[in-house]
Amino acid sequence: MDNACSSQTGPVEDSLPRFATYSREEIAMHNSADDCWIIIEGRVYDVTAFLNDHPGGARIILRHAGRDATEAFLDIGHSARAQVLLRKFLIGVAGRKSV
Ligand code: HEM
Image (cartoon, rainbow, N blue to C red; front, side, top):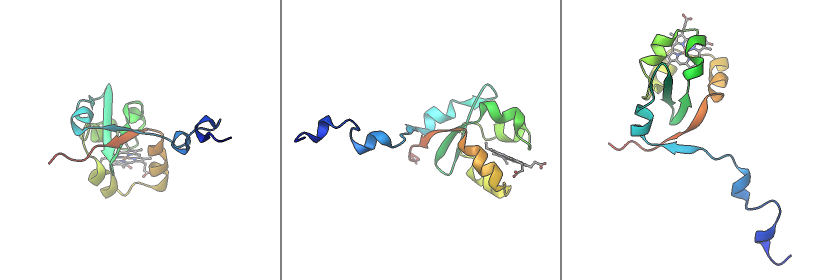
């Protein structure tokens, strides 16, 4: 009772989702059709499994593989459905730009 640390639920932080932070260098290594990560608005997505399902085709995403695709993604004016779909592929957040 007097020891909050022994609580069954643990610290509140443990109940929040935690995402890995990836450096730009690490993200840049995932730049192929077999292993494709992209950054959109600071979040990192592993879209490898989605490439062949993309209505706009795999090639256009691969052009941004390993890099920030925010501008390209937003410029197309993707639908709300596309934004929701994105969540399925979220794996973490991108570290700050080093430059
Ligand atoms: C990886 C995250 C992405 C997801 C989940 C996604 C999803 C979608 C979806 C669902 C559509 C169908 C139309 C709509 O609902 O808006 C679409 C179309 C399209 N996307 Fe993406 N997209 C992604 C990334 C990109 C990127 C990085 C580009 C680069 C410019 C791009 C370019 C296009 C184009 C050009 C179309 C239109 C295809 C057509 O109707 O001919 N997408 N995308």
